[in-house]
Length: 160
Length: 160
Image 1 (cartoon, each protein chain N blue to C red):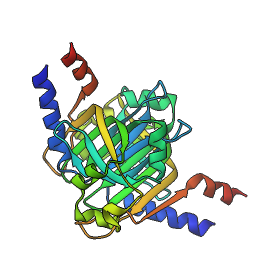
Image 2 (cartoon, helix red, strand yellow):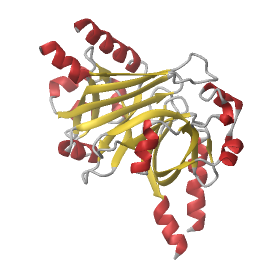
Image 3 (cartoon, chains in turn brown, green):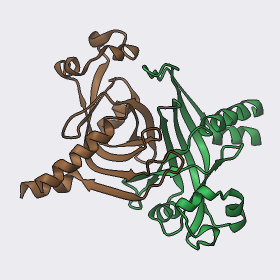
Image 4 (cartoon, chains in turn orange, cyan):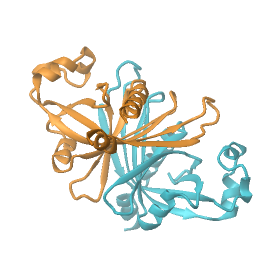
């Protein structure tokens, strides 16, 4: 199954690389409402792990500390990329990792740069990915096939 | 409050008019997982009500019949429109309304046209809207202000 697994990951990384902004969906603390906000994707690793810079004091960090289950919604008309990524989020406050991912464009959000004590990383590991193929015509967007793959299942199979 | 209410509605309609595809987020029937899929926005009325064509046999219709609470996520990099709309969904199987909203582009999804017995409408009435202003620069997307307005509160105030 390793080949399939890699193929899925390559497809995911290939799609997400064309996207800068996604909607990060979290569960509100009362576990009933969901909340969402646009986030700039800092990096996607080869294994599909996604990285975001955020503020440790933000409400979404509180939410993630209560429930690590998040979703990343991407509906990018321009590049015709339609993705729903279900994943597990972790708050990573490793300064070396921040240094590794830092680029000057981030000064827009963090004028203090890497010295900002409120800066932290959000790491999302995908468990399940759904994507919709669309026609290449800009006039007609046809979601003609839903493809879904579960990372978890693949891991399980790989471990057997 | 009527003036404020109208101002918000005008802003919402103005933003959504530039968007063709959104992600419709629903709660799965077990009430734990959320699911999402890209949907073409057929129309937004002047009061913010959004209309979609869909299949009566689709899973999302089942989900909506169990829980009418949905969210519409829009993160449109090209037009820099970032919106999170929380609303109430209803399945509307009124053939006259379908005729009213029908356009030939829908034949992509419904080759049988208005005679398709599986065709139905999904109506979403917004309760709460959040949007993020971004800079006009294509290089730096700055979510510099979150603005939120609650339709429900406004309605309540209007009714007092």
